Image 1 (tube, rainbow, N blue to C red):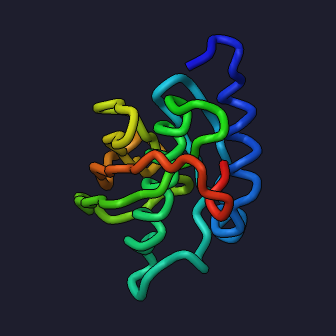
Image 2 (cartoon, helix red, strand yellow):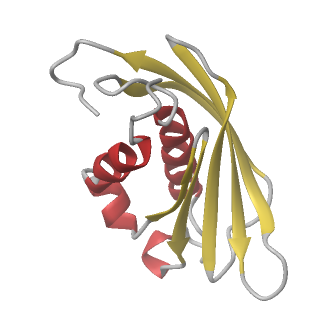
Length: 147
């Protein structure tokens, strides 16, 4: 990747075009090469029947964090599509806010693998609530899939 490429700005712009992230109230809080963090405040509208953050919301935010970590590794003009992920929901989604971190495990020119971790934050230390392994495909030359 070109050293002058501002991957952080490309990620911010792309994230800003995601109605799903706006809908759930998620925001980018950290962008580094091969690592992205997204935070989400607790909202009762995002819970399941027991009042816990819904597993689908956890999966959505983890997928997005992993994909943007991968986005930091690709050339301008290329994009990504998730082709597979596995989520382990390890603890109830109970907290005042949630942190979703995606980190690159295996970069590649066509396929990128990332690992994600979700944490619930309340009083005391952050608690690991979920993990994800995600695989993304680099997409080039498609007018309908851009940034």
